[in-house]
Length: 535
Image (cartoon, rainbow, N blue to C red; front, side):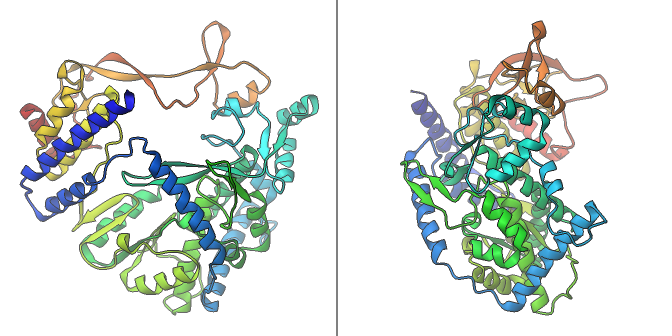
């Protein structure tokens, strides 16, 4: 029944949006392109829990895994030598900054064990997703990773004591479990649920590499926004190319990593990876790629590999001397999203293909007024990224959709009246809560023209009582638990269906209205206020 309601509401919105698009008169070429991008997205249907998409994603993954096995790494020796040099010196520079007494240390294990943590998602054969749940469970681990995880637990006083008294530290598994998650309206992507012990060490390795990247000027914790800025610039002056790769995380062959990284790092990657994965059918699949999405070090490792290949290409083509200098105002790498000067596009594509990567030419651009990177679409400097409405089953999801449409209309000065009226009709009494723009988009309709006293939705924090206080001090020091009533100790696990309650608020004294300059321009905010009046 719930799925039918979700499908019915989404179909209703798609019909209203299609009508609004057909009757819209864009004011400029940028707005016209934005409408075309949105119309193209609407031609694809929302996921709606379609099991066929999941089956197709698994089938594609199995096929790709077979292709990787037969892939031959054929990088030009000079490119390879310079790429390997880049990684080696970057690692040594980072390690020498950690401890100057070992200036050429390749892998600092003491530092590695300082970086471990439980990830926020699910782990294979482990109950719960919160740290306060995982820490009481035996860590699941593959054979080759066992010594690392035992060492990790030995270095943690409470874990060591727990293991001595209960003998419940680790539990061996063969590998990961494969599942799928939505990527967009048309496809799902595969993601591996890793053993918890492997994952803790994988995350430590990933954080280690993040530090190496940060030292040479690439901070992947906020790199997506920088990619967006460069893509926007490139759409105006044609100076930069944006390159997108197909399933980049699933095509990195161990041979490539062995050629690029120091031996100790390659062995670390191989011992912490899952050698096989369990498919939804129950079949075990031997993995030919070094890691999958879901592995804690995949993303930063991939970023460093791609950056090293860019450096190697430049040195081999004499565009750059053999120094670690990277001009970040015209180079960006964030996972498989790459930005380089347009003049380097063809050469880099050849290098990437020789390393086993697959160029997504439909989403790579080196000429013309359009660029896309890290989820942002830009045409002649204008943001024409279409929005994606996932669900409309709850009031909070309806508010998110309303604010997506309002922001889109405010940016391009369009009027999607039919769509907004349809969404308003899904709310109680067809009357939305109009709230200040500094609130979250799931709390109400964000507008500067709302009343000074307003109602809004507030999520109710879902809490559980900590049943065992053995790790209480460790959890408290990490900020994972908090006090409740009657001396209870609580934690807040993640929930896929948060509960909301209606609260009252008021605009503070000194504020003339609910405008938030950090979220919207004054012109956009005024356009949205006009739309609300028309609806």
